[in-house]
Image (cartoon, rainbow, N blue to C red):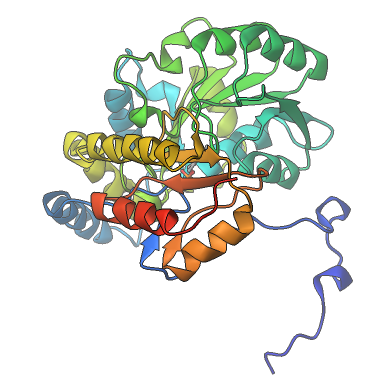
Length: 364
Ligand SMILES: *Cc1c(COP(=O)(O)O)cnc(C)c1O
């Protein structure tokens, strides 16, 4: 019993899923884990206490289905985002991954296409294929930037049903100008999703794509509580868009997809947004320290508006990754030749990474 009796290939799996690999960032119990861009600072105690109280309250009614419209939580997100947004313009789900899946289920699916400029977030193609749609990979410049005219012509040529613009981009950390977003929007009749998972780590005076929403009913701006809010384990993502677009997502979501416990926890965390975001400046300092030190060690660090740094000039990424691993430090080999990616941790974690890297002679 418990033995393997059948292999995946023997099951009547969908043809379009045969040979595909699941999302697979390694989860290894190393002392220093800087591989999936988490916020490595724990939730502050006073917020944790309030979250627990809110969950306890929700637990009394857990025999009932939750508010299917998560009304209070949507109001909380509208308040947090500002820009005059109202709850009718807000959607949320179990991580922004599920939010993006809802967008694809409603606007992509079999016979349709989704597009993104690679290298970009590795979940976009997986989510796209999962809904039965086809992924189209666009291109970036040598420094991983995309300019407005190249972006617009690539999108016009591909004529996709959904475009993903990761801004700032994962895994490169690089920013994307609002002019690029405007140009892409004008170049397509499809849905344009701006994934602002890392927006809180961008320079404070930079405008969010939220400012482009008025008058653009096919534009979606998605966010997550997983990164700046230190809430990855709770699985909460959200988006802002036209109320009609939000209505479309109701057609594909599972009923009661956000549990009452999740709603309670996220709502409480949002009420403490300034405290939850207190660590952002500290993380940005560590990120900039990583970039400066990498350059001093002879690597090439890309401009980052996120909580991580992509660096090039790595002779043999698999070997450097392993040597760091052997020193108790987990970072990410994102599959870009001669590059590795590291998340900014606490000051102590960041120092451990930088010291370990300095002890390895691996710059090309
Ligand atoms: C981490 C990340 C997300 C967040 O996903 P969740 O499902 O909310 O945890 C979304 N988009 C990008 C580009 C990311 O890097």
